[in-house]
Image (cartoon, rainbow, N blue to C red; front, side):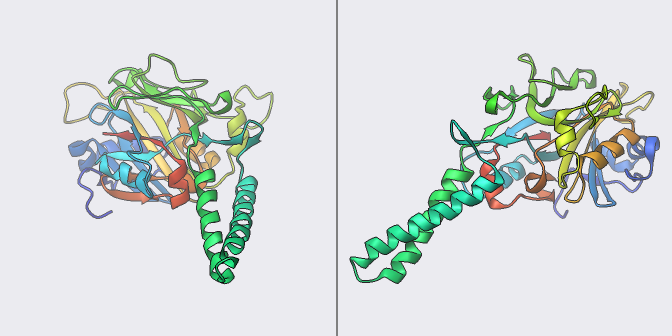
Length: 324
């Protein structure tokens, strides 16, 4: 992570092994004391611990609809920590929801249509071979535009600081949200349902993985059961945000007591279940996961720990979370 000015590597914390001593160990790290943020990597997992008083949560948006702009927009924030954002959805028409299978079908269909159209047009000019190749290229371009653009978040998105107010919710789905109502740790909330209208910064369309210090459940009838977690807990590739309240930890550089920290973790081989187990082990009260698999992204300043996502996934994504 060369070039990062604000994210310090902590030599005192091991998220996978330290348990409840993890956060106190990181808070005692000189890098965290100086900067209010520190990171590490262990057992296939990147993590960052953030003081929300010095680096408040915010919502960011892709600046322009241009190739690879999603990753570049995150870098331009020069944030202490940034990640990708909510699950996204799209319909090709009122009866067809876009899925992995329908995506493959759209590409195959438009490639064939383009090839046939190119051959027919080129045959009039006596160059059917080049016409077929050109037609396929046009078909792929049309399919890419049809499939990978104009996706809708699966929950409302709002940022007072960045003037974002997107109340679209794909198919009126209900998932979970993460946001803050003021600047103190007590104002940060994670909960199931839709984003409250009075939140200052927040995202809906997220996957609830920890609630009230307990991992979400996968079995119907379990009081902690969560439908999203049951369906997505074993899917590899996840970035999660957790809220960890503190009892008596004091930020040595400030006069007021630090009430809690934000912990961000992620990895390509990590799934929601493992992320939830690790967050619960360090005392997380609540936690949510962002959009999964190839969409995951995590970094600081202009450097990526995870990502950026493949170009077609960057086309689909629009929002993300960061700590300034």
